[in-house]
Length: 300
Image (cartoon, rainbow, N blue to C red; front, side, top):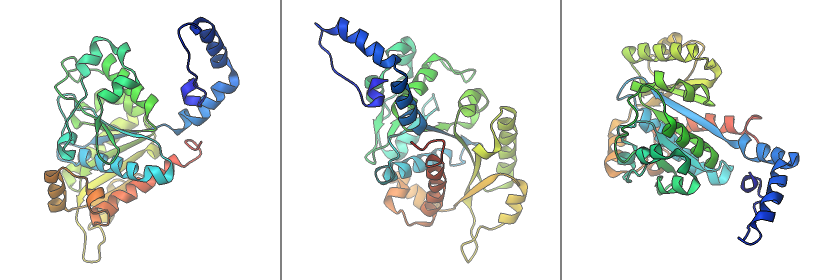
């Protein structure tokens, strides 16, 4: 708490007994608690991404959004950004970015109390953009998509304590088991391909989110692989929006060749060609997120 407030102090072994009592008095001080709450907790935001089936582009879009936020962090004072891949059998985000996965949930499960900021740094994969990625290096033996156990919850709590923005990539197969994470997220994005079957799956996910108590104003739909007409508009936009009436919808246009080119090279699309059409669509989603962060709830 003292570190977060900017009042951290050092101590030595000889004076530790006296210093500890003095530090505890400072922590009990109401003014210090108010500073911690205002300057740190108010800046934290958790964003969950749920994919409506495999191939929906959930990992790609959430990863690109995270990197886009990192690129804006220095000019907009957004703080540190973490990306957590909740595919505990081994996700693909590190393959996309050509970095080695370093997260070992099995080691955390042995003794969750060992997890601190130092251990968190060791288990994070550093992307050259400045994004910290948490993706398992080997399948997690203690989770069979029935419930979230202590290791997962300890990791999430530690990430939230050390990062201003946490992006969570939730695989489609375990959405119902991550209801606690979704309910406590500040924003929930549901991604799906621009097609009728995908729209049906998205509707089912939206119904589950509503049952879990996630407000509609916290839920945003992202449709990927969308077709555009001759003037650059979204084809069949009216029909799609009639299906999702009352929900916020963002469109990511189709550009598979560019996406595959970046994936093969292990680079980010928004870093490679930020003016590309598909990147401009991602920028719009990032604009929405930054506006939320700058709002009254998260403004320091």
